[in-house]
Length: 271
Image (tube, rainbow, N blue to C red; front, side):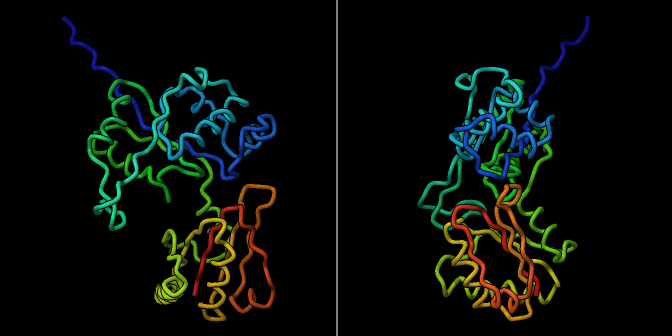
């Protein structure tokens, strides 16, 4: 008598998104752009998935329409299951989150893992770039590991690493510190702390900002940092409008730069 075959457990696939914030209005051009940004094998894998967890369902649907323009989806878009990552609730303290937010319950993570327990592969998608990097999907990845579910990262663009590579700053030692304070005084203090940390360890400090505050961030950098500190800004990487500029703070002050308010930027500092 043969032993029963154990049922297959699905995997959590970390599916990269493009960095261009594209829409599905023109599927021919946007689909072609997606094909240039992501490997064909990734697009084919994404097209075969029926279950998704995403930061923003609307963005996921746009992504899947763009995928479908390159390689057909396994099912019509409206038949796919797209779940949204849970957001911490206001009023408590989340694990690793901000004060004033209550942590997401274990039951919520378990519900997202259930399709994998039933044998389905599930795609985790960020709004842009690699899931779980500067992205709330990291919590789901942790939950999958704790549940014994295989996690498979797929190759695709990361704005942080592309900006670091293009900066010419120290790529052997670097830190990503997320978003900085919005209030001008707190932001200036934080920039000086990061500059001091960079100087002590010769470590590149990377951070990001909401696009409509790009200009305010650049102004704060030029006002707060020492003249000889190196500053690199990468904006709209992988798009036709994308660019990277690296110079000393003194050099930036001599040449005015207009920052777009609708393209994501990565800022890097090396003191």
